Image 1 (cartoon, rainbow, N blue to C red):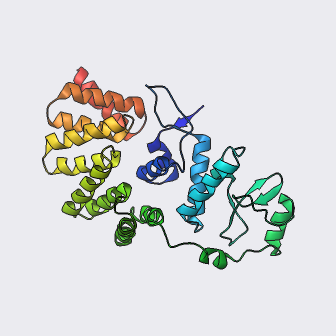
Image 2 (cartoon, rainbow, N blue to C red):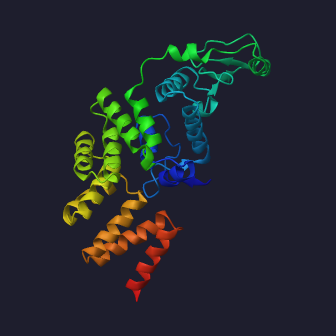
Length: 299
């Protein structure tokens, strides 16, 4: 069975790895694979990617992360026979904000409320014909104000494009106003500041994230990058190692450690990380770099 690392899954889905880590930490979308010590501890199977794509689809259609998480939790508790709750969730008709699942030939909301007395096929026809239309605005009006997680998800959708950095900062700051101890929001906000060249603010948020979550991989990685650029190699090395201790299967950490060890003229240590990177990512441009570095050492 083919499996995908978190980084590969993120590349396939075109999302930031930190977003998938957050969904995993909060148990919204946890990889099924549970492998032995020397294998990746959190590989994704193809059906996991289908579930992740389902989350993204619901988010793109305007459903908040809070509502998706709530629906999944209810299904896990009340409908354990549904193997893939994320995949099972559907919107009740075009323009609807109501999530449903099919159970025993009927469409029900996650809490078990039956929608219409039709079988699944007839209900779908009724929705398409307008007989069973749902007033999306009325449903949306019943929602509570956006949660910290909702603001965080908005930031994740905006932080990859320099044109929307300001909106991303606004979203992450709103998340932190709702929950000042939201470690992932501190890390992502720090990354936006870093990309805007605001290094002091970036460092402040990376360090705040690590005070809240000492094992936060991206915060260690990002802070190490910043420190290395400032010439603080020993401090950068500390954070790269701490990140690797939290996630030994993070390929980019091995790249940066190998390059830093080369800069510090610790070539045997660099070689070990190039080898480890090739074990994790045997293909790609950095894999070619790793092979060239190892070949030069062999000569």
